[in-house]
Image 1 (cartoon, one colour):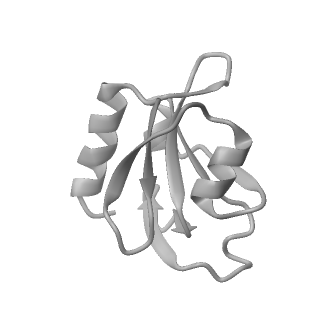
Image 2 (cartoon, rainbow, N blue to C red):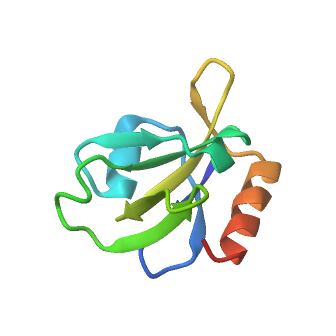
Image 3 (tube, rainbow, N blue to C red):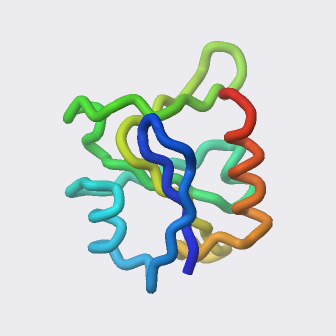
Length: 110
């Protein structure tokens, strides 16, 4: 199963995992608790972002920002995982179309 991970100061990396078990995701994000982020641009493509819920409190390194128009933005710190989400809200692998969409978004500057 393929997901994407974006680490601070690095390019997006494709990672193969056997499943999306919590222990695997906690290890990849390097955290104790996960927060699910649904930003409009990714939500429309059935993509969720998984981050360290306490990343900002732990002063993790800046990763990237997503602007929502005007001055509204979401700032991401620490490792960020991109995963798919199905119609029932279950986390699933990314499709090739979703992977291409993410790479395309990150080829542009946020």
